[in-house]
Image 1 (cartoon, rainbow, N blue to C red):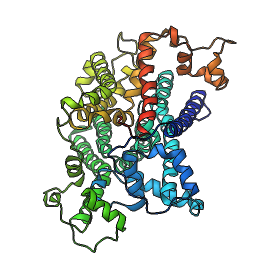
Image 2 (tube, rainbow, N blue to C red):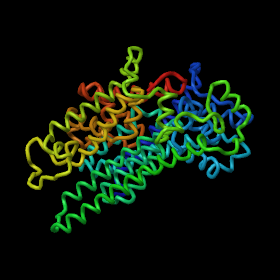
Image 3 (cartoon, helix red, strand yellow):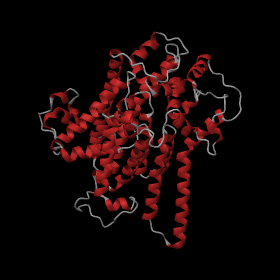
Length: 498
C-alpha cells in the first residue's frame, strides 16, 4: 500500500491538520486561562531560564502537565525517586536522544529541560500522524473494507484521548508501536511484530498483554495446519511450545529488565548517587525515597517487582479500590468509552457466537461470504475477534483495578476497537455515508477551506451537514469533539481530566 493512495493522503492531511490545531489550541488555552494550583509533581529547575526557554514554555507549557512532568524529569535526571518507576523508560529515552542528538544545535539557546519539552511536542506530533497511517493500514487488513478503515482512522485523529497523544505522555509512541506491530502480524511478519510489541512493553506496562496476539496467531496456525501423523503432530506441538516461550521472553524482556534495574538501584549496596542538592531537598520535603537510603519492603519479596509496589503505595491502584462514592464524577468521565467498549464486545459476540466460542482459533471453511447476518468483512470480520478480546480484557482490568478516568487514554492508545466500532456504527446508521461519491460542483464551503481533497473526508462531510445527521452520528461526533477540546482546555491548565 503506497502513500500516494488517495485515502492515505487524506489520512495524512487530516492527521497533520488536527495535530497542528491541537498545538495551537493548547498554547492559546494555556495563555488565556490561569493554571490551577494542583498538587502535582513539580521538581525545581536546576538551570536558569533564558529568553528562549521562556518562549518554549509559553508555546508548549501546556504539554508538560501532570504525568508529563515525570517523563520530562526522568529524561533529564534519570530514575532518582522510587515513584518514578511507575513510568517506563522507552519514552524518556526517546526524549533524551532527541534532545541530545536532533536538537544539539540549540544547546546554547535552550536548557535541557526546554529541549526535552520541544522534543516531546515534535516526537508526539510525528508519532500520532504515523500511528494514524498504521491504523489505516491495519484496518484495511483486518476489516477488509478500506472505507471503514478510513472512517475509523479519521476518528482516531479526533481521538477523545487527543491531549495525551500531544502532551509529554507516552501514548503516541505506544500507539504507533502497537498499531504497527498488529499490522506486521496481519501481514505474517511475526518477527517484526514481536520486536515492535517488545518495544511497546518498554514504553508502557500494558504492552506485555499484547503477547496474546502472538500466542493467538501461533495457536491458529497450529490448529489450521495438517498434523502429518503422530510424529508430525508432536513436532508441531514442540514447536508451538518453543515459540510461545520465545514470545513470552521477548515481549516480557523489557519489563523484566526494568524491574532488575530498579532492584539494582534500591536493593543492592552501591556508592551513593550524586543527586543535586535541590532534588535531595525535594525528596526530604515530599518524602520521596532515593537510592542508597533505607531498603524498601519490596526488596524482600520473593518476586521483587517495583512497578506493583509503586502503583499500590503511591497511586493506590488495586482491585475495586476506586469504587467509592466520591469517584462518581470520574466514572462518569470514563462512561462513554466504557459504553463503547462493552457495546462493541456485545455486538461482536452476538453476531459471531460460534466463532467466539472457539476463541477465533478455528475457521469454518464452509462458511460462505453471502451467509445472512454474518458479513465476512467490516467489524464482523472473523479477524476482529482477537482485537475485541484484547479490548474487553483491557476494559475490565481498567474499570476494576485502575483509576477509572484514565480508561479513555488507556484504551484510546492501545486498541483499534474504540475507533473501529464507532466507525461501524456511523456506517450502519448514517444515511449520508451510504453514498460515497461527492456530487460534482457541490463541495461544502467549509470543506473547501482545506482544499478539494477534503471533500473526500467523510468526517468533514458529516460536520458540514450536522443538522441532517442521525442521532447516533451526532452522539459519536459530539463525544469525540467535546473530549478533544475539553481535554486541551482542562489538562493544559492543571485541571482534572481523564
